[in-house]
Length: 379
Image 1 (cartoon, rainbow, N blue to C red):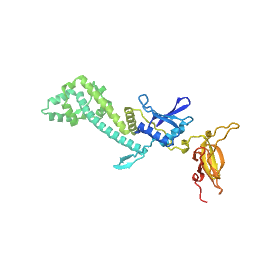
Image 2: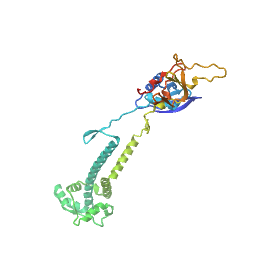
Image 3: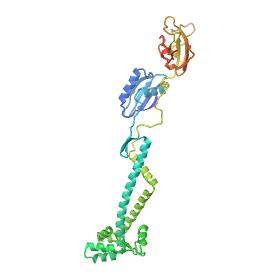
Image 4: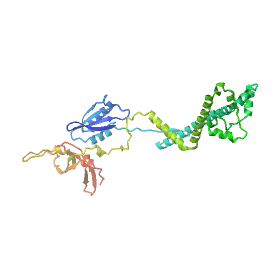
């Protein structure tokens, strides 16, 4: 979840939750925050209210107590409530017809390889279809460039089959002075000029010529025929360039991904950040100045510094603790809750603990035995 700090009134701050994890209900989060407050896991929140509505899709206000550190409260919310959640992803895919669990990098590599194969096969299919259409148009262009001879040949034939056979036997050329020669793509002219005896038609081309309608012999239709062929030649050259250069295939993959991103360009409701998810325990403890006392018999406790009021001249002191018979306060320190406390034993060993690890108790309580807080080695 995302949070920010607001000043709700003079001297009082609030930690406002702007977004919550996926699939988490707002009321559930509020209940868990209240439970953490009741269990005294979070001590610095005075009030919690859900102000979500039309103006703010998610707005959960955690009003802080005076002097509370918002950063500490945020860390406590992340630790003790569902405000921070972890989602596990088990990526299983078929690789070579076998199920495999894949890391993210390998998954992306396999996806790119799959897209390369799809684009290559698609391009080959489109190339074959374009070549088939171009092959038919080439035959029609040959016939148009020698139209009178073709019409005479067809009219002199007795049957359709005979006309097709005679068309296949004839050799076609495109004369240098032909009016449509300058409009014909150089690719086709090179094929025609390379054959001295002329070009022979295939059965597919001959049947296409036989199926031509008379209306297709007008000037505008002939120009359209040449234009369609020129467009097909351009497409064929593009397909061949893609198949010959892998970098062009990768560019198509990038373009497809960009198109997909634009098509499904709904704004994210969450953010992906490079951020440590493991919280240090010390980050959950508010740093404050406390009074640490250790009795003669080894009972330790801490109390807030403001528990002891400033005493004027002739004033009356306050009782520090309820000590057992024969016990008394032997050590008293004023320190930060984040400070280290070094404890030396009569065996020459030293143990370290944080001040906040000492139990916070009332002013009159006797405390807790320090041996229960330190992992002492047996003598």
